[in-house]
Length: 140
Image (cartoon, rainbow, N blue to C red; front, side):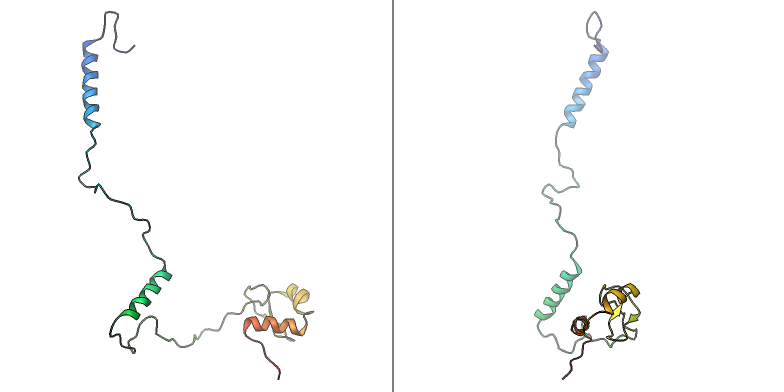
C-alpha cells in the first residue's frame, strides 16, 4: 500500500492526504456562479424562417391603424417585366433546353427524347403537355 511502512502510516503522507480531503470537501460545495442565472433556460429556436417573417410583417401592416393605401411597402410594389429572356425547359424531363419540335412546338432535351417520345406523340397528348406549360391553343 502507498504511504504505509511496516511500522505504520507515514506522518507526512497522512498530512498530505488530510490536506487533499479538506480541499476536496471545499470543492464539493455547490455555489451558483455569479455570472449565470439560476433559472436560465436555453431558447428552443433562435431564428425564424423567411416565410414566417414575411407573413408576420404582412399581418403587422394590415393591423396598423391609419396605414395609407398609397404607401409603398415590400408587398405592394409591382415591378415591370424582366428584360431577360425566359428560361426554356424540356416539357418531358424539365431539364434546360434549346430544342423545339417543328410539328407540335414541344420542347425536348435531346435527340433521344425527340425520337422516342416527341415524334410519335399524338395530337391530344401534345396539347396536354402544352397546356401544362400554358402554351396550348384551342381550335373553335
